[in-house]
Structures are given as C-alpha cells and as structure tokens.
Amino acid sequence: MASQKLVRCEIRRRGSSGPTSPRFIPLEIFGLWEYLMTTKHDFEVIEPRASLWLDMEDSPEAAYSETQYERVTEVSAFVYSGRDEMFTRACRYFRTDECERLKPIFLKHYGSQADKPQAHVRERAGIWLHRQPGTAPVS
View 1 (tube, one colour):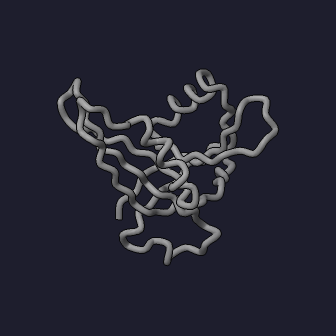
View 2: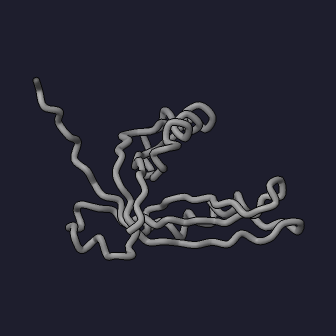
C-alpha cells in the first residue's frame, strides 16, 4: 500500500473573514509552499496538520470509521520538459469531492503547446488520516 506524508491546512486571503479552503501538501515541500503562499500570493495558512495519505489499493478505509479520514485524490500529470528532453511528474492532492473542479486549474499550468507532447494524467483515490495531537509525557 503506497503512502505519502501530507500536511492538511486551510487557506484564505489575508485579512478576509470569508470561508477557508483545504489544501493537502507533501510534507517535504510544505515549508517552501507555505512561504510562497504567504509572501507571494498573500494567503494565510491556518491549522497545518501532518498525517498520512494512503492509496485505496488495499481498501484501507475498512480499518477506519468515516470520521477518521477524508477522501483525497492524487492527480499526477506527466509533463514533457524540453529543457531536460524527458517527462517529469507534477503531483497534487485534492479532496475527492472537489477534484473535478480543481483538476482543470492544476492542469492549466501544464497545457499543451504545439512544440511539446500532451501531458498524461493519472488519478489515484486515497484517504488522509485524521490524527489527534499527541501529548508529550512530562518528566
């Protein structure tokens, strides 16, 4: 069963009191992503929490109740890089119920041009596990 460490957070425009929007970001790039979102795009990043994303290949949801996870779809675009003369993988994670709405926005960044091959897209259903904050023992 494949897994990925993801940070789930909410974002909204800085100074706005409007609704937030969830994001799922690989843990390894979360710091850079958070920096860009706050300094370049003027968003605030609220309540980041790390956990695991598990693909649905082995039906992991059977081991958890519905309150213990969110359904999250991995969308991968295999995009040709003319500079490197090879395909590279761009991967994002979306709440499954929002995937069809958000996927075209993601793929627009990798639109086809006459001089490069069309991106290949793959989707994998999965779940993001809710974790309770741990308490460190007092010594």
